[in-house]
Length: 263
Image (cartoon, rainbow, N blue to C red):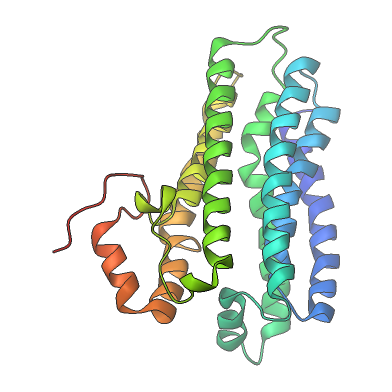
């Protein structure tokens, strides 16, 4: 099966699943569950692509294993966060409920479908890799795996550090600026982006693999300009005020770097 049929079948399946999820989220009164589903959906696409792709099986299933490990870790992390705060909904969805009041149902249903579409678009590197017929690994693929391991480890460490900080009652109302969070205000986002860079690097060893560069470029745009850092920082400024402004003044927003002196 070539790339376009793989993408279309993936989109059809995910559209159906996200439609069912929307009904469930309405009944659960928590639209934050879509973040969990979005994370797990990549494992479904990668597994389907590995099963249906025409390329060398060793490459197909190695990539699927990488995606399943990343997808599963992120999905479980988000599930613990969403379920742990339920029935309190993530601030982003509270805001959308307010902005879309009066037309919430159709707009949120469309939003869920956009998540299905985004999964397929971002899965472009996977859909390219599974077509590669070369019966051995390329050195570039080895470099990509090493980067993937480092990126996933960094993201997991950042998530654990933030979770430990939030569990400490003495830190209530304070800003997490320890560990990796001392060097970046969003180290989890930075390492998440590196995971996508690794997938794109893996795809570069395959025919037309340069198209896979779309994924880290799109992820970077979303993190820096749309749903990642902007919304997160707005919420932090509302909840922590001047303490977070001081943190902004001294700490890199994205790429880990040495803290600056306070102005």
